[in-house]
Image 1: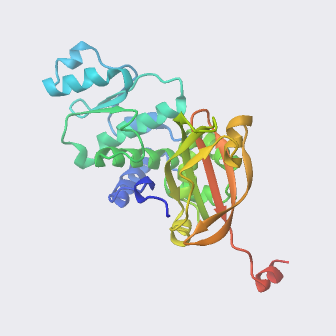
Image 2 (image 1 turned 60 degrees about the vertical axis):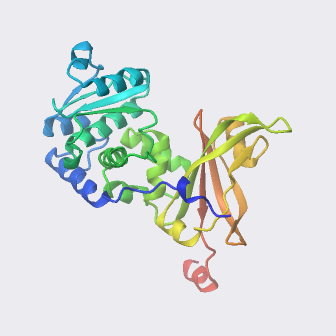
Length: 299
């Protein structure tokens, strides 16, 4: 059985326009090619004020009763607000600098994407910041934020200079001051090789043998991977003792080879796994064997 489509994250339909807005803002800020992206400069050029603390009661008094109720109920898990009336964002300090940078980039997206100027206040929490968010505006702000942090085509060039591996992801993560998890996602999207990334989260259940269970949350494939291996049968669950889970137990990256079924036939993939403390990331890579002629030409 192929991977369920609802678990595959896709980019928004407005991707070309969002990329254009992001590249234009980077050029105006003279930030193209500057890594990590100087977000303060982008905020200045966009004439958006970034406030590091969430607003107080005086802010709440400016909201409608409905918006006020949403704010109060979500305050504990709130990561950011884009106040389109005041051209301001309110983002609390985060112990994870890379996550805070993404929230800032995301909220800036709400401010500069023209058609987002409808609801005067956007309240973003952990769920709405997920790359597979149901709300179109949240998905678009996510994509815009990634575009300015990874700088679109520039990241594609850098990513393709590396062979797919978590070591490459970690290097690029440091260069862009981005989380390793979001970098891995973008890295796969931009590859010209057949590469895929899966994320597994621990479940609440323990199976009949006392093994902890990790469940597939989402997956993404490079264009080449999606074209060649759309029918791949990826495990929905992993259990203690599975080779992929070893990275969680020994707290370092692991690698190996495995055979998976693609449309009823077995295909051998190289895999790499990494546990970041709360989710298991699995990188799959398939590079077809060279023909005899190809091997001669490379020798």
